Image (tube, rainbow, N blue to C red):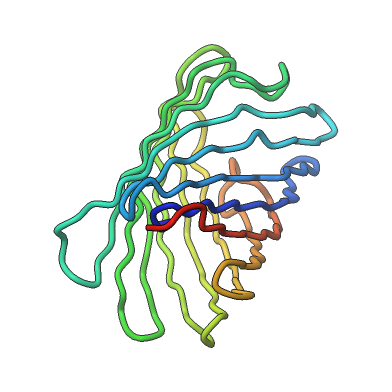
Length: 211
């Protein structure tokens, strides 16, 4: 969770291959801590560049609430968001698309953490909702104080279309209390998934008011 009064900006770029190459950026998420347990979230539209279509995607607004009064060492939150049809004709869903996410994490030892997320998405595709469930599970290893790495499985299960299974690897390095660099790569494990992808990211946090 982003602390009370803090503003965090997460940015990234990604190159994916799936029947052709696709570039996404800036993949920006702006998060503001309303309290120590509540965040406001704004997803900035990406610019998507591909041989078959290019343009800005849709923006999204959301809120994240930490679930309290759970056993020590276990953390869980609830994220509600809604995207708006603001993107280019070739990139927008042309609908108001809600999503529900339940991220969780469990500290296993001083250096190991298990985490994951259960999600439901209602994207508009060709004018029709395509309810999609998603499940992710990862292990994170703290290598040194500022440096960690993870391995993750992710699976998408839409009402229409085949399942998309991914294996995802990544690492992050904290440059200080308020800056972080990320690198991640992934490969598709099913026919409907992307072939592979690679991305880099940078996040920066500001304290806008006293707690």
